[in-house]
Image (cartoon, rainbow, N blue to C red; front, side, top):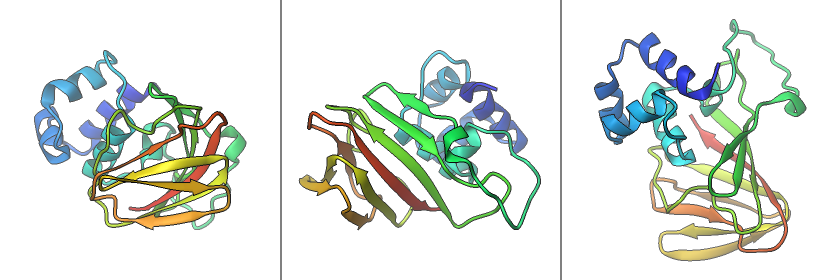
Length: 179
């Protein structure tokens, strides 16, 4: 099922009107309607807002949920990848059948790629990023912080932030956020 239809189905499964979810997520009802109709692709910031508003992991927008399990082995090679319009790819690594207090994602930033079009805020208290390969700039609260291979950073995503790769090589990072 396409992401647009899944967002609508998840909203309806929670018995939320389009306007109610848009209000909870601090996005306009017209933007949410355009997303659900497949007229526009959501940014990663919008996906995060929708996931937070629906109290689901971002991964729920990409894979069919299955029954609860105490153990779930995830084949990361078979996880769906969502391409963003700003030179970034997101591969949700979160469990689908196992309730968890955190959500991991593999982020690939192409040269000159950004995670979002502009700095954004998320309504959770903490994120962790580990740079697996390459390097990137964390634009955080008005300052740039270069983060390189094998370095990691914790930060409060309720402050203005974004990830940018101004370098000539691909950057691959693991982002883990609390749920």
